[in-house]
Image 1 (cartoon, helix red, strand yellow):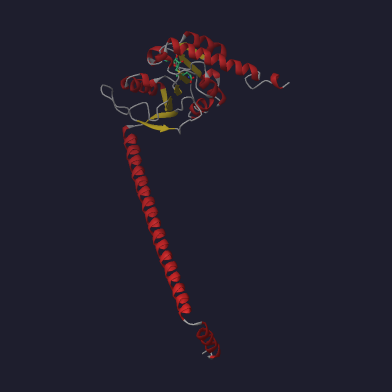
Image 2: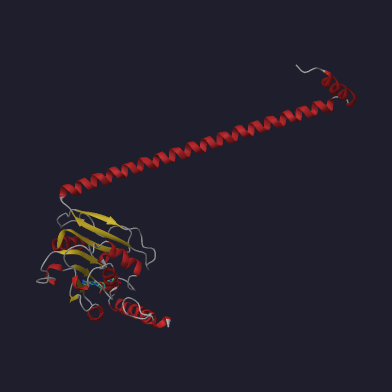
Length: 293
Ligand SMILES: C[S@@+](CC[C@H](N)C(=O)[O-])C[C@H]1O[C@@H](n2cnc3c(N)ncnc32)[C@H](O)[C@@H]1O
């Protein structure tokens, strides 16, 4: 029977639907109790979770650290992307979510702790640099300094190719390049297209640490590309203007030619009317007799 068919994760369809509702309810309860900490009324949808996972290279070396996994939709997407559970370190503040994650991902390491204090929470845990840090933390609830500090701490834990991946319900990068009181960080940021099939719609940003020189080069290249785009936009506008102008000129000339034709026709008609019918017949006869040259 169809309802008894099992999916990859070993659960039947109805069990999965029930599980999804249960997750929604758990999440909603957590949000009612601690709205600032939970940061959303429901778990991320699968399209957003997949977009997050897409930024992590499964062939990368070292553990993948997830911050704020909640009920685990992003964790699931990371596993589906090909990252072994054994490589996952899940840092979650909420005790109930931690229990659930432990049951759901028994081979991953679940740590109940504060993800904003990475050095403290991960003290003695890592034996090699991490490949990526994937965060669903509600960053927008935190001041700029704390966001920049989190990114700096995450970069310190990762190998040089490591990426810090973060989703946001805002459309711009949630981590500023500079902020008072924190040493400037040099990184390149890559933003995904908006994920509209999520409630609310969201975007994913991936940050990679670079040297100061590389950051400067990227900035210059971005400015150059920006100027090229501006130039292309201006040219497009100019072409559109010229096209509009030519079209209106053509319309004007055509209208004039039509009017001219109408006036000539009218003149021929009125000339013909002013000649008495007999004289007209005579004229036609003469015209027929006149040999053509
Ligand atoms: C917006 S939810 C995202 C949950 C899940 N990843 C998802 O996409 O549905 C944020 C999660 O971060 C957790 N969280 C918030 N602050 C935290 C902190 N300081 N340390 C660890 N987890 C935290 C919350 O408990 C919640 O599970």
